[in-house]
Length: 94
Image (cartoon, rainbow, N blue to C red; front, side):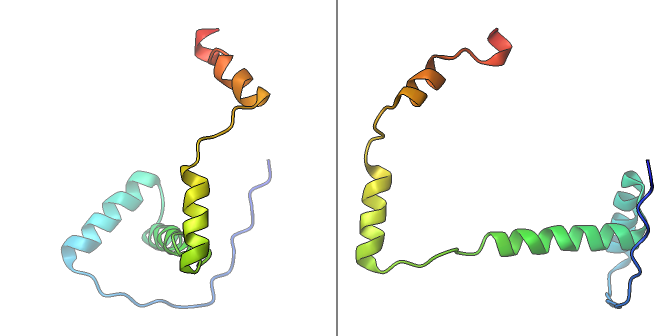
C-alpha cells in the first residue's frame, strides 16, 4: 500500500502554554505515536469541526416551530418496514 505524501504546511500558529500543559500534550502525543504538532493540529481540527457541526442548521418562526414540534410529538404510524424491523432478532441473538 502506498504511503500518502506528506502535505506541505505553509502557515504558522503560535501558542503559549504552561510547562504542565506542554508536558500533558507531549505525553498524549507520544501515546498516539504523533509529534506534538500533529497531535495539536489534529485535536484542534476535530474540536473546530465539532463546534461548527453543533451550530443551528435552521431557524423557524414561532408558528413554524410549533408545527414542527407537533409533528415530532405525534405518535409514529406503524409501517410494514417498522413492524419487520421490530420483529427481526438482533444479529447477536441469531
